[in-house]
Image (tube, rainbow, N blue to C red; front, side):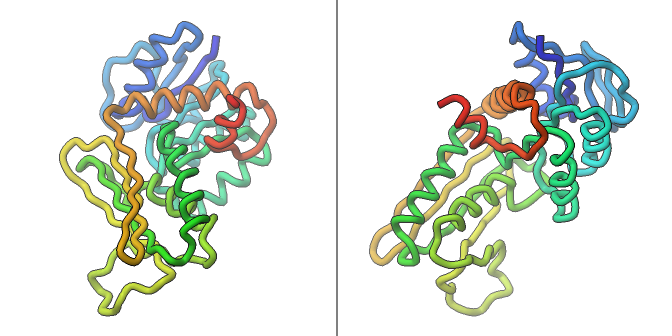
Length: 254
């Protein structure tokens, strides 16, 4: 039985993970971490990860960057595998994640969907073929409650493009203050926030007289919850300290 802790358990994604885990006979949710509004849960909930002294095999985090310090403390002190599904970390926080990964197994991804990670691979391939002859633009759309922009997935896709482009691109997230033609070394990223959009990401390759578009649409949060549980099972089996991502999970499945 895989014993998990859900960080951000009272949020939309945390509840989705708890529901999916409850339907998985091989997974047990032993605790949750959350701050602010509380609700009825089938497991104990703690505001600070440092307060938890029970047993667990892995932590799955869908909370906010403000929870990171406590989660890394728990991971390092107890060598507890940690799946970070939260986005919007600062550069210093990402450095802290790297340091913690020397001691504990840590998984981090800008998106937990299998389809999005396949999209990233297609973006790499497209950029390798199209090169500098096509401009790359990314449009991401999310619900009105999402606080970070651009999304972690948009940055994941931009990084995938950067891997294969023959130049070091500049990410341009706003053009309102620019009064100049688009340079040939940009990756434009546009963010849309509204309604209940779960998540849509479109990568546009615009060349001379032709346009290629790759798109992924998420129709429910369950695809991210399923990816998080898959990552949790992988991380527990990996055992060794290190920083892992969805490419590691998918390579294990091949």
